[in-house]
Length: 535
Image (cartoon, rainbow, N blue to C red; front, side):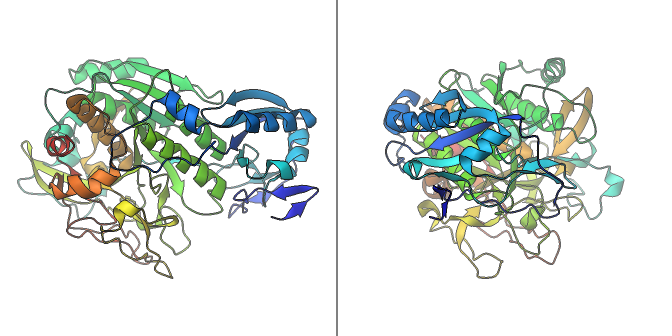
């Protein structure tokens, strides 16, 4: 480790400058900020498997939470630097420190600057964070100095049909581009198990902006003739449910998530965790939801993400979020993540293909997107969603950050289209209707509309998992090992074999093939068949 002022560099904490940003001076040294310090677990985290034997949250905290001695060392360090210990969570392995920018920067050997960027101004840093040598190996991450945007929602509004060209699904197939589907119609097409509504389950939804309007939700569910689910907001880092109507408002994301999950699983309780769209916001939101011993979500839905990359995600953040999902797997919590809406480039214009994180985590169910056409109550055609660079396409590909998991070794994950042809974690695992032209009817900020994107697929699968949990009487938990063996072999998904997710014709993408592919995974769900395969 590099020595710096009697400290050592914290591995994985290095941050690169954000492309297109420009430093414009230093922040106010007296400004008060919050820093989250993540500690090591008291023993190595358990490796999840297809054996559905889960720990309770209390058991997990007792076996894998932070060691009291480690917590005491971090608190002592804070007091030595006149910092306030605002919160300590052994289960989440976090200590929250508050203080002035000057005091915190001195304590961790960090220099901060204000930056201008076309995507918005932010406070940032470059290089590593430094910690005392006696905390090396104890502290795994420090978050909150850099507040560059770290999340974007994965939804797409439907454009008028006149603006669309080359659309498939004419003739006898349902012209969903005129009105979209209700979530109930999609659930019917995907054969969700009947006589289930998710009762007894809790779906946690993570949001990094916007909010929901209760009157709109009541109206929406009333129009569907569905009982409105119980919805509870949870504030993380002081971020509350704050609707902010406007063009491309994140309210659309929040309402889409709640309305899709709530419509297909109205008997489940829904808890919405609101947090900041920064690395600290991600770490705090994910650990809060996973270790929530009050609401106890059995399924999490995440429709936000950002492309992998050192200038976007630091290694310590990827490790922290991955470990939280690993903990979720050990406690029987299924995590559904949207795979992205910008094809194989994932909205990065560097000539390379990119996966979206956290969908690329090895501990989540990554959800890709399709174009769904139907005749009556039957699927007429289903292909990879790809409307081109201006319309969007399903994310997917081969991860540059996450290694190929053991349960995916027989899935014929192709080499990355990037130079070097790395074979890493293949994304996605499954898929569902995401094309805005065959999208979902929703109500947001008083306006009805049709919305698609893989943002809709994550809550759709979350609702399905809640119904399967109810039907089978046990948590589905970490689905992937069983998905790639038992479920896939049971022909319980609709295999998508047509289309690609290359939206530029220049970067290179991935094509749908029989079996698993890096556009739609194993395909869209046959819900009843999946439930039977998991019994």
